[in-house]
Length: 348
Length: 265
Image (tube, rainbow over all chains, first blue to last red; front, side, top):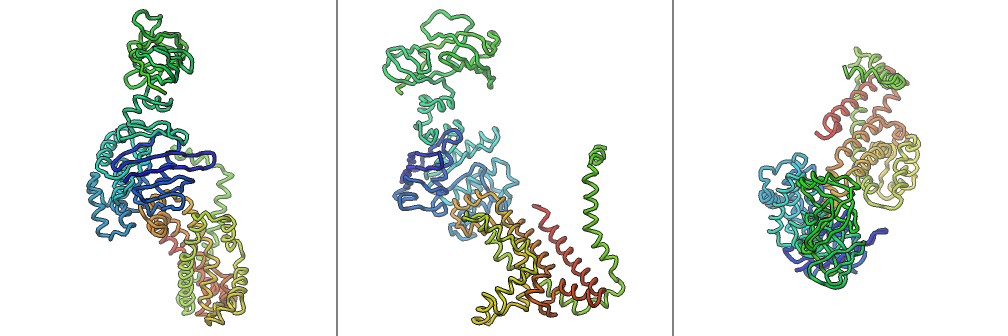
């Protein structure tokens, strides 16, 4: 029953080369920056774009391969598009019933089933409402009901929360999570928002430049990023280097002391709030201390993030009290300090 | 106050020709109404006028239906198929727009006439002869009017987001169901606008009709033909016919405009 796909698509100078497997009931998030090939992968799985080579197999049946291509309208899929693409001239009910009607369900039956789905997503009473009169969150739920109403074996979600404002988003995200938990088929979620991916997915696949650079459970990916992009997403300072005992020589210059001795190529991470900043060189306990200069200061919700040039360059989150004390301006020379025990090291 | 100031800034260089243009379009119509012998109108509204009007309305409507049946799929082909040489095809479709209608009529005669390329076989095999019949009027009007519909519908199709069609496909809709239930409703305003233009053009058609279908009262004499012929014998009758044609076209267009063309309600 597993979905197994080798997605190889070449278009001009861009090429996608991605292997995906999704178990029944599993939610896999495809996370990556714009232009990484996420949409291409989704369109290939949906049958809107034929593969250049590779295959898509779901439970023994081949959707795309060397001598088989099942077009979109023949695949048991449901797609929630980024801007929903609800049919403007149809009511919410007709939108949800559309898939059932197209697949041959008699009209009355399709409408009854569509009404049940609208009720399930909390929109009973909105049957006759036209899409343009729905709020963003309501339109998203109609789109989800429309995609799920046909009982697809593969659900594809293309940035399902990107069009929502921050307050709606939180609620719709948790509702979406509930519906995904109830859904027994395969789900692929395409997003560039790490929070959506972390909350909704059982497994992440990080896509950069058409290639999977990392995959694993969200907690694992968040703890052990393998590229700058992922480290940036999860908000960690990230370095590549070579360890020898408790010393790591960093590829970008500079070095760090770690608590547990290891040897060989490693990745090193530590959170920005593990970094303390000092006007004068701090004395005392064994820790990493190096001179830095302030590159930029950004105000976040409750902390201030400081970008510092090294080597090594580093992000530091400081409290408002520290900010007041240090009176930071770009170009200021400071000392950064990180305890060896805060530094997390794992093999490259 | 603000309004006045904004209005005061309208440049004379544009306003003068604009007013002149408006006058140029409206004065002849106003003149027609002024010169109409309103008192003797009832006597001039003869049975022939009624017949010509009926024929005009029927032929223009049939021609519009013919244009819809053939033109919408053609517009779809031009807008959506990805056919090679679409640009060239599109240019060909617009040829009847710029072609003098009389030339269109001659071309129709050469192809569909009794000894024409196709007309010869139609006559020999099926006993069908189009020239100088009411069906011939419909064919001539449709030939001249179809580009209006095709261009209007194709423009609407090209402006419509094809991703809705992809969404329909992912919901299991075949190409035909997608066209019928998603594409066509989304371009309906364009179709209606095109059909109205097409109908108006067909109603006023003269050159191709008189060349291809001739002038047989009750059979091929539509209003424009009747107006032209009356002008030589009875100018007052020509004026009456013109006014009737004017009122009917303006009435129908105004009625449709309120209902359809003013945009989404």
